[in-house]
Image (cartoon, rainbow, N blue to C red; front, side):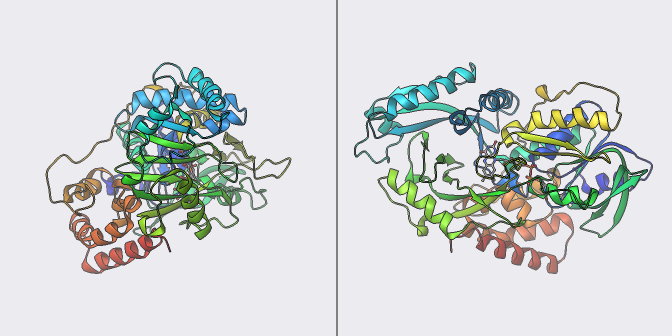
Length: 493
Ligand SMILES: Cc1cc2nc3c(=O)[nH]c(=O)nc-3n(C[C@H](O)[C@H](O)[C@H](O)COP(=O)(O)OP(=O)(O)OC[C@H]3O[C@@H](n4cnc5c(N)ncnc54)[C@H](O)[C@@H]3O)c2cc1C
């Protein structure tokens, strides 16, 4: 994939786009994919890297959401489970079934979870195995390091797990393969209007500083927690729509939870669900739910969030992890849509919301990774009306999403991680990686799996990237400095 060629198409003022999407996270990618499958001329502009914000910091679950079942939101659970089926079929290299065990320590817990998860299994359809009650022995066979004291048994159920940033790259490639133009490092700075209707955007290529006016029949705002700032480019008085909440994760060595299953803790002290999930040879533990006022591009896990996670899993494990065991910590911001009537932030819906402004800006936000395809379909249904595009059906239900990887043997970059020099070159040539962070955080997941190792890999990755992208030594040094500074925030204080 050649970014310069894609950029040249944007600079060519002759092309008027049917659909222009702002934001290259799950939501924007889902919308752009839907638009290209309908044959619309489609441009996606992302100011950072694809999935650089919330969409690379999820709990990596493609799920119906057991928590929403408890809240009685059956419609959301059913929709998510339908999307889970589609993703298991269309992206089998990236979305895989995973067994979860809910341990029961009190007499009522086993039957209680069996009823709830039995319903979840019934709603799930046929692809994954049905939930099962487990004896104490079988529970420990699945989770050998679970605290056995007073354990009565457990409930086994299935959901799916994925690699969020890699799925984003697969969607980005599917868009480009169908003639769409997905561009990273291009920021939308303002909206163009004619007769008070939006007719395009002004955008800056952050690598060259070049600014372009780009015309489009309809503009979609898919900027997640940043949606309000784009809505205010349209209408400076637009009321706030989002009430973001931060979720933090810690990553531990896999040895803390050997076995073949993930642990689901059904109720934390603040009434949440918590997961400890085997992921890419490590153990991912999360998440928290902390309302935030400031929307930081690089949110940092709070000390109290790390303590909360360590404290809760310590209650369930025989081997107690401490801060010294933590390999990486990361946080993401949920784009939760405010309940306009109550202004409450605690029980906000995870459903997505579409708003069409008076001047025709289509904002889509909320939702979750699991439903990104359906969100894209709904956004393009709305956008086609606003842009008066020829009515055509969505084709995303059958789009295969591939995890194309480097297959050539090459030098290992770090003894503790499986990534090779060929992966760096492949990321630059075929996946539009532009920086050391793009490679270590999202094309590989080194930063999330082991922050210290990623600092150690940075100079080698910078050298390889510099040779591939024709950059000089100054660039290389600046890249290593930037990655080192960033990775320090991924280590617990
Ligand atoms: C802690 C946590 C755990 C989660 N776990 C799960 C899970 O396990 N399963 C699940 O299904 N969902 C999960 N979610 C939800 C899911 O991750 C999000 O709903 C989804 O990633 C949001 O995607 P988005 O595209 O709307 O936002 P983002 O990923 O934030 O993308 C918005 C993009 O817009 C770009 N942008 C902003 N302004 C501009 C501009 N002016 N010009 C160009 N680009 C711009 C930003 O750079 C950003 O990349 C989780 C969320 C969190 C926070």
